[in-house]
Image: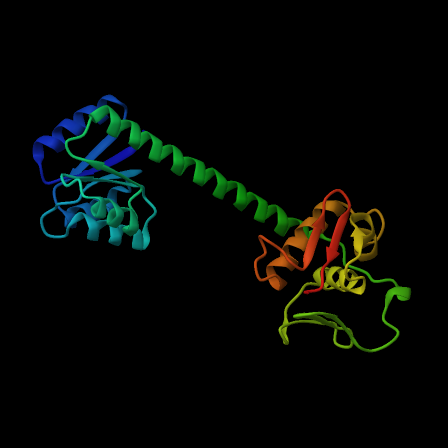
Length: 258
């Protein structure tokens, strides 16, 4: 049963909303001022807060600002003023929606439901990402030790220059803008292979076999995990990589900066 906190200094409004929301299956608590609203939020942990803008003592804007300092509870703000700037200010301090008094109760209930759906969807995405991270960590714990065959070891000392990213072959170190960064053995091996052939596509199979050996379990998943980790460390924007480029259906390519 979703928990709703109604914060309004008008007792008739609190009573009517409590009745309407209870009939819709919500568990409702109320507060008549900003201080009690903050306390109720801490102790009752509501799923959504209906917050009036004009409150005695601490006003709704400040209540919302304080809530956002340590909570992501959805906030639907109520106000008797139909000023555009108030709506902008409310959304800026963290309100999720804004309703002007007098309002249609069924519309407010629909907005509450929509806010809760958005929160549930965001929580599902967070849970899925958490599971993905756990899976990545499990793969990394059980990954075979990367290998570089004898014939692939550098015969001459030097560096592989990828612009702002450099692989120092002598020390087996990766430098970004001249500063060494920590990489796993797999990340170093993959970057070294890609940077050995700048501009050339290296297939997934080739990367897997030359890093972990033929028949590595979960090879494609291992590769995806380590490429993602590598991008986090060397790309300016890992979500839009400019160095380690995916070539769909084939593999990856290291692009030298122009």
